[in-house]
Image (cartoon, rainbow, N blue to C red):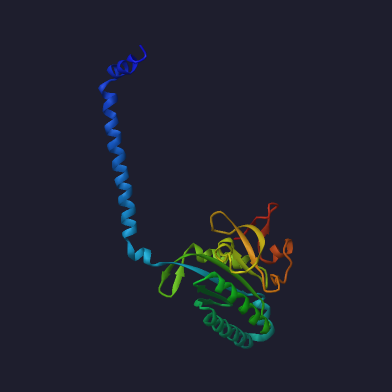
Length: 243
């Protein structure tokens, strides 16, 4: 009797039920074809893909620039910034970086490797101190859109947000940078999870340590550091950019 049940079910199945099976298979095949065509079209757009490049972005910003302008006057300040920018470009040439933009007292450059970007950041910071300047520095590695000599994309915005959180004298990097330089010998200090304004999700940030094992941050990490960076601290140690 048990062996007869499948045959009994087959006889009782209506033609409408059995005819839906081929229709579902055809519908699935059409969806698969549409999906393949969509990705094939995207990958064949060589022009669009060719404008993207994996790079490390470096942002620097002079701390207390307004106070310096008042102290030195317009002419003296302009001369000091010019000397700083000249030294910055010398270090870019040394570490294989490329200048992208100069905006006021901030600088943006890119590097083929994150290791060179970190090394340049420490050297530029030290040269700035010789001029009496303190820098806030941030680095991030990611894909960017090329537009002539300019770059765009989430990676650029992320690097800018990281730099904004860094305290004076600190070279702050994203977790991506920390990961890609594994094996380089560079050491880091965990700075916790942060929410960067306009950037989805949370990012763990790290302070790159100098050869003496110090982050060279002129403000001790913690509540004072967060206030100085212009961010608010929540009980879970997550930081949200204002504005």
